[in-house]
Length: 221
Image (cartoon, rainbow, N blue to C red; front, side, top):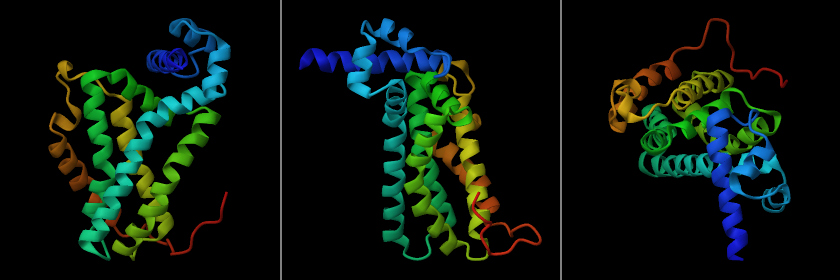
């Protein structure tokens, strides 16, 4: 049992290192198994496939972020009732990312960049995984935003939330170690980063929709 657990951990660690260096598309299964001192059968046994291994590496970072978001949404509703202020919702959405980013910049900025690349250049398997991971967050957040911003159509809120996500992804994709002297948003302090982002993003979310927009959702595509 101990040997199997060690093999699994070695494969995960090797995949993290290699995906961070070259991205998932540039990292072969053979390279991962060679790095881990294992074989292809071990990957299939522990993860089902290379795609399963990729998803598990990403899940180890993304799932806790989304769990913290959901918990912060619940706490905000309990504290503020209906509606929750937009700034509070943005704080709950963005803070978990900034905390993880600060940790990764300190110990493994290449992993932060890998996460950013996974969002900006996803394979088919990873794109589906990202959608699954983010789905529950969107289902919780969009109705809360609609309550706080009743004059902004829901499809417009989804577009604007996508722009918020793009900013966060950019921070991950360009992460550097603290020693390089280039902290995100000109400050190494997460509280300062958060305040700057929320101050910038809140007016954009609350702005009137573009002329001619209606409250009807666009047809599915």
